[in-house]
Length: 410
Length: 143
Ligand SMILES: Cc1ncc(COP(=O)(O)O)c(C=O)c1O
Image (cartoon, rainbow over all chains, first blue to last red; front, top):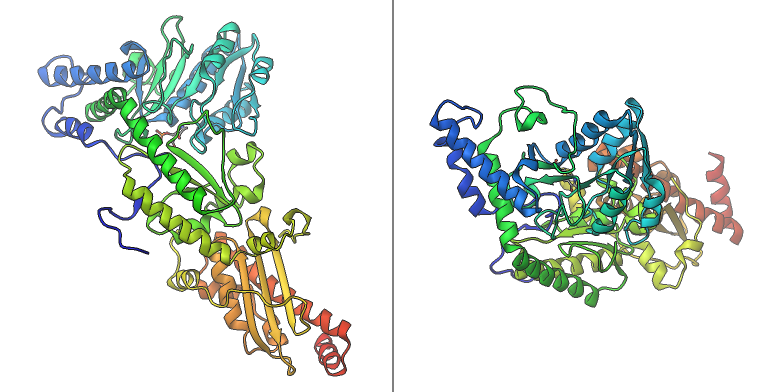
């Protein structure tokens, strides 16, 4: 491999897993650990007031990013908690009148698992809608599933594995027509694409700090006030966060999260231009030099910072293991205990053999052009090396239809 | 996942990648696994007149552990008789490469690949029916 000036290895291309903190946000949060360390819920002295002021400013920054008002923002520990609070909180509050949930098979594990729990333990009826081969929801199927018993419809805005953007406006409309609340897991969307809770009729939205260059361990749940969405709290205690989520807030985390949201709002155009340019460079750089590379998920309705590519005839984990200086994630779930490839790719109808060859590359604010060039070189080198030792590649080159082969399943 | 040095070494410098003429009478080919399961191994052995494996080649589609396992067995089978090679156990492969529990199936596949290659060679030899070979085959089959 050629010398690589001006980049630090390994190259981080896993922005869906988490993002580095923006140093500007970090700087603002640090004093809240050591100097301004008051409890924001202390009402009797200036330590408390200062902390409270900072927390409220952060709340306003989060709200502003999604077109909400500050009172509609509940701080949580992250999107996992927000998703749980939205689904369980709404279900438990409304279940006498509305005992159904509609969600989608490609949702994040925490949504699916919370739904599974409500279904098995709390008598909710859950409909898991399929997606089309581009990863998008068929709105007619949604329309058919939502009815006067539907308490909540939960559809993620941007998918974490393939980056596709669901039709938020249309989904919001269908929910509103049926009097069902629309919850969206926007962990991968907030700060990356334009979101407006009013234009999209969103009633609840989950956000995570560490996916938008803020700190880990904090997130938010947007809860609409007009018309009001009511929740049964999961965590009881001192009644903080308007009773929806008790516990002392961490002003430092709130400040870092709020500042990160403000930066995303101010710089979204610039960020997206940067990300799109690098994603295009990576995608073309790879497809120009390698055959049989397939982009998973819709080609247009997507957040460009998520490139999920299948490199036919090369198993994804071996590719990741070869590229030791590039941090990506694999759609081949071979790394986990199960040998099943990604359930998201399978839901798109991606054949298992192709799902095993997929790699997710995440590009973000801090990604540089030299890093992308390095990654292109590395991937091309390793895909070629692995194809040279792939019996499937050899058979394909010999014109053998791999589907006609009788494989010995094991 | 933390892999052993031996495993990484085999993965980064795999031995005996390649293909031999499948149609040749002294070559046995084993193709095991399935693309849908995420691993396919092709192992080929070349057997001399004395029934010794002279050469071995592999091609593998699979994770790093699968590639390392196949690379390792090409080294191990060389110089062995068919019977000796047939005795290689997946547990030895797994132990040598210190495969983590979720990767044990890779060593099983490698063992299957050896067995399949041997069996392919023997079937061919039987069909060819040349005297010497046949005796060798039946002798081994009797064990
Ligand atoms: C779509 C989606 N939802 C939820 C989560 C969980 O977020 P958090 O780590 O903030 O709990 C993630 C991140 O893994 C995600 O990508």
